[in-house]
Length: 192
Image (cartoon, rainbow, N blue to C red):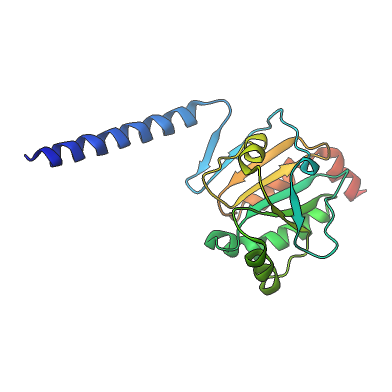
């Protein structure tokens, strides 16, 4: 066998070993539960997130960060195929969450203002959308999500505590997960 073939085989073996160990540790970790290959649902973390601490540029007219209610935050980019695929279901999820006392907010990341505004012109949003200008890594750490990719969708309590994180494109059952993760008093208040 040629030396290059041996080195390539050893390299791929190493990559496989690291990937296998990572999956094993993620499945055994008390902090992360793998739900499906494209996304992960993580349990409540002690972090609190205040979006006013981040440099945000409003992309939709009259954009205001909702206060005093649970908040669904979707991180997306206009060049992201899965983000476009989940755009309409996310608008519907926003409507359902609103009927249960929660709000929704979009955060465009890793993109520029013109591309984001062009996307929103073609695909209007029913909820406020902002451009996150910097500190994505810091925000991702606080939210408990990997910075590796988007979309990511996070449900925050009214006080900014992370309730649920779904990484990757939203799937059919995720709407029920977000509704179930809402605080009980929020769900009851809207029913009564």
